[in-house]
Length: 102
Length: 173
Image 1: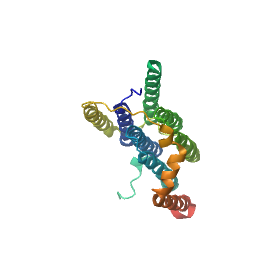
Image 2 (image 1 turned 120 degrees about the horizontal axis):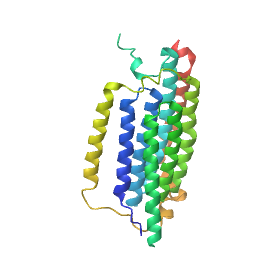
Image 3 (image 1 turned 180 degrees about the horizontal axis):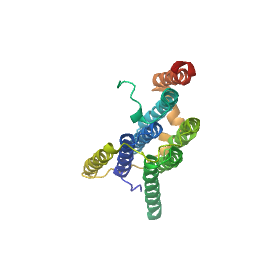
């Protein structure tokens, strides 16, 4: 009855992960890099849920729960770092942050 | 029977296209606030995709945690920082653009040749609610994975304290 192959979800997840990598590579705004990391985490979650459904295993969904908790912690810390960076350097563009260069 | 299959396929295709489009718009928008709004759309489409996988618990969690908590945090920081200058002329690091696009093309070609080389895997019919319902997942979470659950609690506490310490004014002066 369910005629959607697992590979459709995996391909979607791979494309979303690639878009996230693209964002991290080409953008210079730290907040957008941060959002791209969230896109990558979400694409991995999609893989976990798809595998969990197709293999009839609950562990994938439990893992998604933990990934979400860690992502929430990461977002709090990351945004605090961005705020501290903005206070110190008045910028959030990653190519203007070169504290270790000189 | 045929009709339900078509409906499932149509919904997953629409949601997938929307997810890819909103992710691209997140990555490529000029202003960060447009990126944040596209990211909210992205999170909602992913919740819809989880619903097509019959994983209601994860779908609700996705909306609560990502579209609710994390996006509020991101938008608050965007409003605090007040960035309305100089993003126009230098959107991205020019030297990395071609490198990034080539890398992504290679990545997608590699993955697609791998994914579509073998035979497809289809889901079995079973009682999904007994396996992925909130009751079943909660039971597994609080028995088999109880230690990990407690450690995640400690991690979140540490993250709250760390964020407060780092966002304080005294640290950077």
